[in-house]
Amino acid sequence: MKLAVIGTGYVGLVSGVCFAELGNDVICVDKLEDKIAKLQAGEVPIYEPGLKELIASNAAAGRLRFTTDLPSAVRAADIVILAVGTPSLPSGEANLSFIKQAAKEIGESLDGYKIIVTKSTVPVGTNEKVGAIVSEHTIHSFDIASVPEFLREGSAIADTLNPDRIVIGTDSGIARERLSALHRPLTDNILLTDIRSAEMIKYASNAFLATKISFINEIANICEKVGADVTRVAEGMGHDRRIGSSFLKAGIGYGGSCFPKDTEALIQIAGHVDYEFKLLKSVVEVNRDQRFGVIRKLEATLGELAGKTVAVWGLAFKPETDDVRDAPAFEIIQTLVDSGVRVRAYDPVAQDNFSRQLDHPRVDYCASAEEAAAGADALCLLTEWKEFREFPLARLETLLRRPVLIDGRNQFTEEELAGTSFVYYSVGRPNLSKGVREQSPALQF
Ligand code: UDX
Image 1 (cartoon, helix red, strand yellow):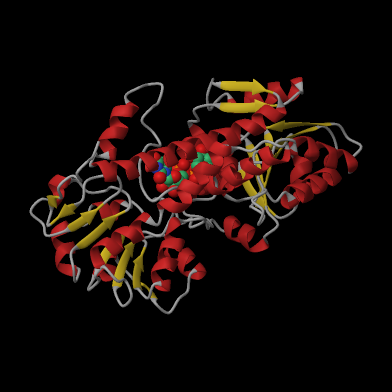
Image 2 (cartoon, helix red, strand yellow):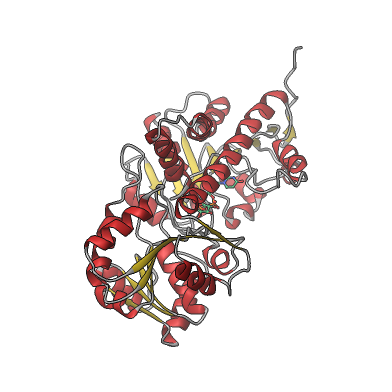
């Protein structure tokens, strides 16, 4: 099939490349000339394992092209996929201006029947609005469909090529048939539904996953007070198939380009129809607080923070990405420098993106994990990059001025820390002092 993909962000680029990999003819479109020129030259604007290679092989095979010329791309296509950004407005609502502009341009470019698919995450009712905008600008017939994307950064290619399910929301028989045929090589698990339900499925899925994370983080906070171990609790819960074991990792809370934005947007969507989504509001609030656990633990070990030097390992919102959007590390580091701390930060991939957004005289960006840790009064691990997990603890012990390790991602085990001199705080697990478990708190009934 011939596809035009509008928008070369994460979703657009990865979907375009994966559809090309399946043998389709794909043209990716973006307004940013620089970005398109780089993509044409084989440079990839984001860090995503496997993406560069897949772009190169599909471009070489002539199945994947990049352009700024939206009208020609649309005219050459049978199916037009909208994958432009829907960033948050200050109110938390999704900003639909890119979607609306693209819909207008698609309408102006139509020269015959096309299927227009939205992959961007958009509030319920947006696809219908897209349809209305397109019809204002064309005399040709078209159908619209919502096909939400569930890919995760860091495993975007694998997620796109092996999805758990494909959701196709449309009221058109032709669109249903052709989009099913387009996606069938990926999975047989295709859910056909109406447009509004498809739009809702995406928000509900992300909100539910965010709820799981905030839930386990609150359980972790209680575990800390009652002397239980949240990793064992999550494991025990996860064996119940109704609960499932994924998204039950306690830590510093979720970040990224989707969960924070989509949870806020769903609260707004509910609000517009006079429904207060109380549960989701709490999920967001719990997530906002969770990151400060790191600061509280630092204070518990170091006392007054002013004048101290703290090393921070990991700036990305999760490993295997250079994306720092809504990364908890921003607020953690900002709070530290506001308290008079000097921060020595390091991330193997996301450091440039992060330092462009947080430039402070008391934050030093270091060239290696080792350099960041050297001479610091404590180390906070905020992103679970493999490199940190594999760093020899004996070496770390000698690098730090004080062997204080605040592990925001529960990366190290008691066995690994036994015999070291670390004061070790993690999330929802017993604290260790000189590598030995502190006594459980006394409980009163
Ligand atoms: C997410 C959804 O998983 C994906 O389906 C959707 O399309 C986009 O949003 P992504 O933002 O790439 O994907 O990251 P994900 O792997 O889901 O992690 C999101 C955040 O939750 C990260 O900050 C991660 O550290 C955190 N997280 C995840 C936890 O704290 N605990 C967990 O158990 C899982």
